[in-house]
Length: 98
Image (tube, rainbow, N blue to C red; front, side, top):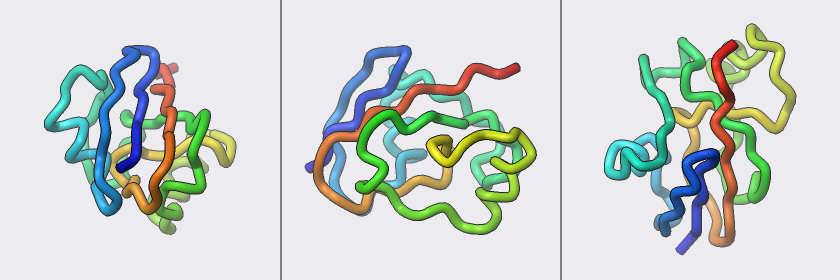
């Protein structure tokens, strides 16, 4: 199992390897991650990976294109596109809209 902590909500849960984080957020609204599109096109679900990047799927071209528009660094991902790929601890901080 992998422990995922969502900031600033402070909500923490255990997920299985292979889980899509969009599904985790659907099951646990306490994560307080905002979603609008769920298809890597709007950027509302941007999260800064503070810990555990090595336990996450690699970003695909669609995700990278959206992140480039926002000018975020390599530590920011779209939560709708992340899948847990390894066991450990992950800490995600929701990026506030500008």
